[in-house]
Length: 316
Image 1 (cartoon, rainbow, N blue to C red):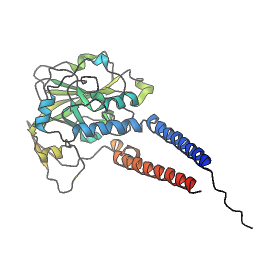
Image 2 (tube, one colour):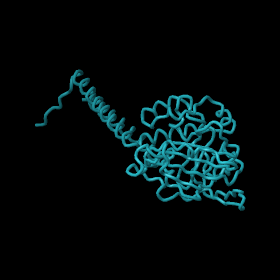
Image 3 (tube, helix red, strand yellow):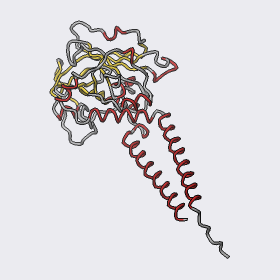
Image 4 (cartoon, rainbow, N blue to C red):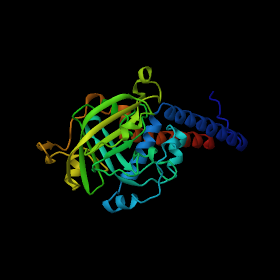
């Protein structure tokens, strides 16, 4: 004979509800800790910060942001961490332009200095010196974090650059194209001479940590320094920004016309979608769109499971 199902008392239902919620919270916290502990979470948050700062940026806003309060004291900067990124999300950062190095899948907003509360490095790439001008007859020095090769967040792929690659920076009025000429991975933090101006030379210097190979360069002990010379200047039209991958959304579009960069040696023609170096191509776990989709799906499924379990308890 079938046994009659025993109904739970209200006290038992409350106890079971608390138990389900407690186990659910522990599981959710565990997944969250794994996500951020792996480095994917930090990269995802920085990418979100970058998108927020870059979205809706106009020439007028970029000009206004140049006058925002900021600091240039590198000694007060700290290594990137989940705590610092979450803190930075509460402090707005103001972009003054954008930077791209298409060959190695680097696309970031650009900021003046380290920020009023040293938040800018958690948003993108920063200018290191207050008296340097984009595209000017000086050494335009920029720096950004290395986050562990988890995609194009900040300057993770800088060590994959090669001589001849093009670096683009824009203040949204003009686009300045620099050609990579010099690369080094063993620059010590004390070798600040790489930031010096060279007479009559318009150049750019990108700096990040050489932590892509800690067995050789140590952790935070050396810097990757990529330097290039200015070869061209063009207007920052929508077409040119798209071709040089300096838009907020730089995804390739079919049918985009070629853009010519006027140089002293003639004209250098570029296409909208340039070939990304194989090692710099985004893998599944580096694709922020897929990660965002996975996070949404996980949260929906987790919520539905909890609701289903609670409904089952209270219907018994």
